[in-house]
Length: 514
Image 1 (cartoon, rainbow, N blue to C red):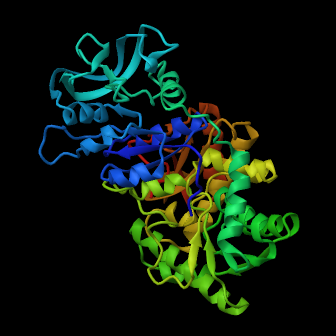
Image 2: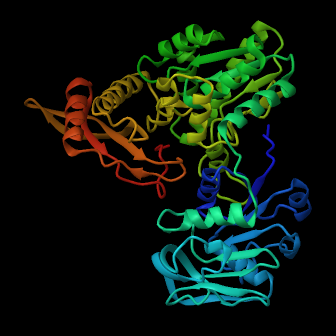
Image 3: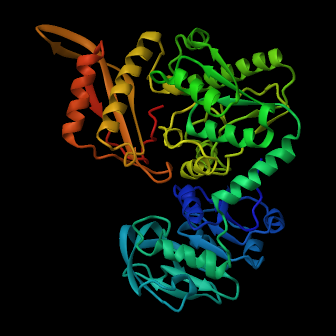
C-alpha cells in the first residue's frame, strides 16, 4: 500500500551509500520522497507527477561502458533535477560534458567557494565546508551550464543550467559535515521545486486511516503483533480504520526479552481493547531452529513459522483476508532497491514464504522512517513508554544469539540484556542512546572466579546514537557506568565471565550483529 501525496520528490538510486540519507533529509523538510532504481522509465516518472528528481551518488565511473547511466530524456522533462556526486557526473556525461579521473582525490571535509547568485546556494556563505567523496570530477561542463562552486583541486564543485532546471553538486549536502547542506536542500525543494512542505504526521495519519478503510472495507485482518514500536503503530492505524475486524495475533516465540510477553498482552488487551490472541510457541520455534547457525536461515525460518502460526489461527477464527505487518522504509531499503546491495533480508520483506495464504498484505508504515513511526504513534495517543520502546527485530533474540539457539542461551541473554537496559534507564540515558542491547557472541573464554578456572560465555554490549537508523555512531557511555554494568552481569548471570563493548559505527557495521 502506498500513501499518495500531493507533492513528492523522486530519488533515483545509482548505488550510492547515502541514498537513504538523502531521503531522510528531504523528509526532514516536510516533503515526501521515495527511492527508485535509476532504471525507472521516464514515462513512469512523468506520469507520477514528481516535483523534483534527485540523482544519488554511486561507486562507479560514469565513463565506464558498464556504469549506470541516465536516460537523456529525463533531463528534458522540465522537472527540476539535482545531481549529487556521481549524479552530478551523470548529468555532465549525459549532456555532452567531460568527466575524468581527478588528479587530486577529495575525501572528507573540504573548503568550497560558492557563487551565491545560484538559487541553490541562497542564504549560505560564499566559502564553507562540505563533505567530499570522489575520485572522478567534471572536467568540462555541458553547453549552457555555468560553474557555481569550486575547490582548490576541483574546478567544478557545482554547476547549473536554470533553463533546463538542472543542478549538480560534487559534494554531499545530505551529510551533516556539509555545513549549509540542509539549507541547500531546502532551497532546492522550496525555491526550485516549489514544494509547500506539507508532509506532516497528522495529515499522514488521517489519510492513511481513510486509505485503510477504502482498501480493507469490511474484510478481516490479522496483525503480526510483536509489541515493538513498528507493529504497535501499524496495529493502531488498522484498528482505527476497521475496529474489531482486526485480530492481533501475538506470537510469543520464546525469543522475547525478559517479561516482554506479559507486558505486551497487558497493554493491548486492557488499554487498547483489541482482539488479541496470544500464542505460546516457544518449543515449536526452538525445534525448527535446532542446529541452525546461519543468520539468514534463522530469519527465514522465524519469518515462515510466524506465517504458519497465523494461517493456523486464521482457520480457527474464520476467513481472514489481509495480513498487517509493521514493515518500515529502512526494512525495504536494507532488503535492496533495484541494483542496490542487499544488506540483509528483513523478516517482513525477504523472509516470507511464497505461498502465504492471505489475499493481501497491508503495510501502512512502509513509507516511513523510524522516528516518523514514533511521531505517528504520538498522534495516535500511544503512551510514551510504548512509543519510545527499544527497537526490537521480529526475529527477536534469535539474531542476538550468535550461532545455534538454545533455551539456555536465551535465558542467559535475557538476564544480561535486562541488566544493561535497567542501568541505562537508571542513568537517564534511555533517550540520548537510541538503541542498546546485549548480544550472546558465541565466544567462550577463560576466566577466574574465586579460585576456580572458568570457560564461559562472552557478552557483547551494543549501544548507538542515531537520528534515522540508516547511519549510527556507537554511544560514548561513561566508563564508570560500563564498569557497573559489566560487574553486575558477570556477578548475577550464570555462565558469563567476559563483557565486551561494541565501538563500531554504521556503516561499516549494521546495528544488529546478525
